[in-house]
Image: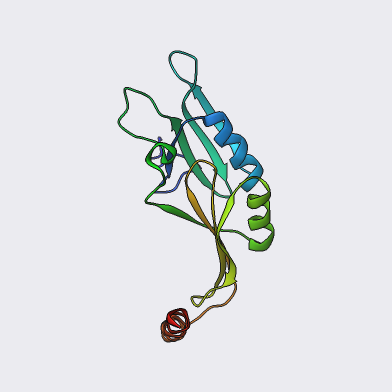
Length: 156
């Protein structure tokens, strides 16, 4: 029986548009340990129409900008309105790996008021990735108090 959600996928699958899929694939392999699953060349053979990669237990898809497709890359748009939140076992190691691969630190690693140790990088293709490891289970009241303290200290 055909599964309504294919093996290895979840309900939501992020899909990126980039100018150069080969460069993006190489970066994601180096930065996040991505595994190439599928690469489909463009009909003219000069680029990549579709690719899928596995990062951890999740799949991402991507394709290159094309004149016949209205979607534009974050590179063309000057940034992306979305970011990806990625849980990893060791955020310190994962964050450094992403920076060493060419990611730009947007927010350094820190212990967050909601119980995660997290930091954000921007990849060379204009997408933001918040890498995190959950380090403490907190109640909603503890999170609210932590948020108040954090925002009060930021206002100073």
